Length: 347
Image (cartoon, rainbow, N blue to C red; front, side, top):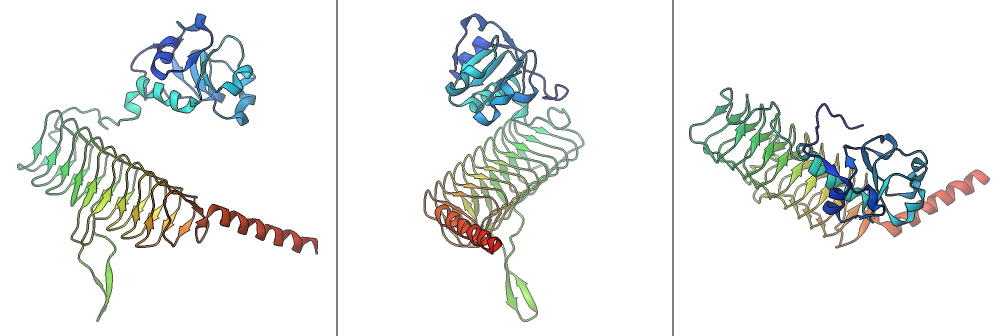
């Protein structure tokens, strides 16, 4: 059950208002005025709840369902008990999330960690810093020389922003975040512990062992990017590290120097992207994917979880395995290995 201690609905909605918002089709017009009091998972619903079902494998949960309304695809309509408002849609989860963003706006855009508004007297802010209207800077935050921060951005407790960095409007800098050598756009969310702009892992052989290669680039994070807790983004060596508009990055991801990630990509937890990789738009990397350096990954690519990518991938392809190869090839090889294993047992 969603915890109402931390997230209270910002408004009240009826079933009719849910229909107007999402465009779903209501089967029972007599239930249009029923109020929606909360959101709930299918197996944890109850009186007043709005829920959803998207996959036939969960249809057994409909047998004893208690709820006021449910988003449901056409093929499962007959399974819903009587008395529940059925909202017909082919994208139940998307529509459910749309309602959630209206009812619980603070759950999708983090607010001040300590509930503060404005500039805390316990923050350190250099006299040269430029702040637009309605910026919040919490206690313990440190803002360095010549930093610029746009309107309505929140800088959480203990965040550190080094000199000359620029941060856009309506952004969120989480607790313990450190930012250096970076330009950050509007509507960007950096969750707790994110590290932006530290020097990359660059070394060459020298007379006394390995010697450091100067890392002279920046990090550029475009608008509407979200980066999960404890993810690291190294600055470039001679070129900038760039994360494209609308890209979403999970927790505990390593992005090395000179990496360029396109627009609207999805990168799941524990991925490691080595230096100078270029990733196209709308590409998705499953959890624990690793890329060797200097690869070119096309647009619209999907890479299966725990894959090791050692070669360039053309646009639109699906790869998986270690080393990663196209899905069809990977599946054939897995099937062949299983066949060998079965024949060995039969002997």
